[in-house]
Length: 178
Image 1 (cartoon, rainbow, N blue to C red):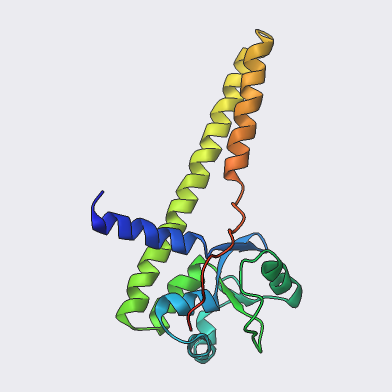
Image 2 (cartoon, helix red, strand yellow):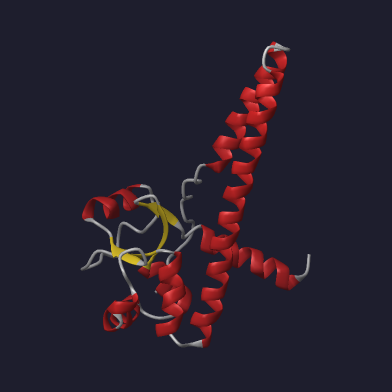
């Protein structure tokens, strides 16, 4: 594997680790995006505030205190260091819109990578759905012929459904640099 491919995979994994599911939407937090764009979180939010008309509720929303506490309890985000305001959550469309207000080379490059990761996640979900549909059809055709085959289908469906569920975030290891 070439060095560039490895770097791409590492970056994609870092992005995946920062995508959370809140309100049944895949989102990224302002502080994670700011870190990736190499800007301060408050600067990112200032730019968003100046361009609020570009961020309707399906592009960006502010987490509730309960949602924020839930993320902290899962170790998805740091429980120390504190924030004065609740974090903003950006959907895929919101992340895409950020590239229009953060006009740096880093922001553009990072946005392209993030959008690609979101697209791969969508493709992955569609592939799993197609497999489940095919399994259902096969199961109906085989039904009644053999109990062993029915058991195999049951196990296969369970495995696919387990993989389709979002993976809980892993604990971060190491020190946080400021």
